[in-house]
Length: 546
Image (tube, helix red, strand yellow):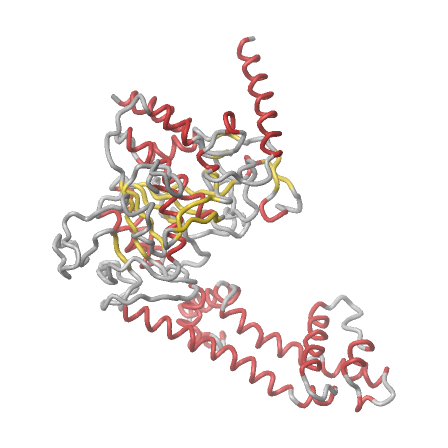
């Protein structure tokens, strides 16, 4: 009977808290630190966790690697919380500790030139793959390809060429050719409906042509294509359009070729930095300059994890950790598999216990490189925390890389996948999800944290949720260093505030045609991480090991 009363009381208090959350107009600053019961916000109970942990003694300083797009190591709220490589003498241009990296005082940059300059902008992985394969397969006759070539051709045709980016630009070539096939049909309609077809102007085309009477979507697209062309001509006659059809084919193909040349420049510059892009043994490239365009992302992530606490400025990070910045991608770039692997291995070799990975993509040409790095981190007991992605997709059906498993090899047991939630306890509208692939959700909407030049800004994304989990893991390991990475994941998942059975707004507005979904279908734990509950469980597990 007592248990029933407790359940009823909890249910009533939860309803009250939920109604209070709904009455708030916007997320409070630092809401991820707050507690549902005490503050009526679906935070992670960070402040409450610190109160609980006062009975324990900190045992270690945990190093957290932010594998990202760089960071502002001079930020007022971060500069005192950086990992410092004590084996290096700053600025002497000598690899004092013989680890293969010169002057890596606070981390390393794998996207920099040997002279210290930065690769500022990069390209999408799909563009790299298209350029690698286009000369062999773009205009290939598949009937003349060998069995080995056919395997790669199918990858090019069915995977690469279906993605956004350069493939979209090339698809315009095929689309234009399809639209031109409708010229005879549209011409016939004009002759039938206009008294003088040779003098047909845009208005006649727009009002007298029927795009399709059979639900032909391509015909409709062709209609709007020709209408836009008529609108753009000084003399908008139908005959003028027809006479230029060959030019349009050339123009759209030239647009594609020009885009290829622009992207090739970035690929060539990447080859200067790392000439061995599929050889993980050759990973001593780059420079020690951690700041570049795009560093606001990594700086924000770093602040969430470990901005200096209680210093009277900015905001509080979650953990009293040492922050190591590892730059593996430039602005507007998909990280290369080689850089991901090299960044992870650098972090592990230099003492990181937690590696935050707020990045991802849907195409991975060399997953074996990343898997090797994952296995290396697993052997060393390092936790990898990865963002689920921001496309409102089910990643059970469409993998968001890097992933913990490849081909027939077993899944590594040191990776936790993180979706994003709101201060109202809803999944963030942009968050990817997956009952089998995503492990937990964490605060990821309107997270207030550090950005370059001593500034602060709220940002949203699974990139913001991931450092919340990294910070909680670092906080727990500070007090309970005997826990393994596998145990840490188990603790984080078992200690969530469960939302199973609760109907919430579906990410992206709809999942399988429904506007709501059971939160338990979004991730394997069915809930939102909670530092207080995790600390309690960690204390029990750690005590049980002694």
